Image (cartoon, rainbow, N blue to C red; front, side):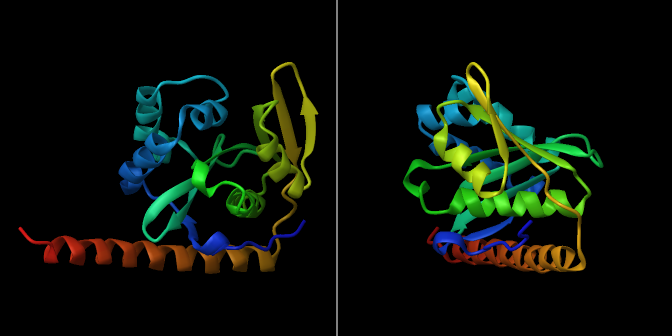
Length: 196
């Protein structure tokens, strides 16, 4: 299993989201059009449902990574399942204008690396059967995909952790934390200097 990742996919930056970033996740889900909301949640949901979902998604998921353009969250990958379980499920959302740039593939790489370094043996990606972009991303990470009536399920083995995979995650997490701190500082300076 290739554990390389691209933290600067398509000109943006990938980093972990923290619980304090719920407003950014809410804003990201609010920018998804009806079709992308349907694909993300595997069925029709209202914008109000997505907003409610976002309110505790960062506490409920094992890990959530985001792709940022400047300081705006444009794509998200979530890993769900019981902590220290051998199985996890990944979910993704990418705003329409950012699709087709390799962002989802890079986010999947971060989820696979995270799962690998925690000893997960099965990573599941389920989506509607017509969601060919998600299936393509799963295949790029060597997922076996099975089709059912209305959905497809991709399953992959993230592999065993290695010293290199742990080091890559540690470096990526360090860069992500530094980026998050710089984003908060930049936002504070802009707000401070804004005319009142």
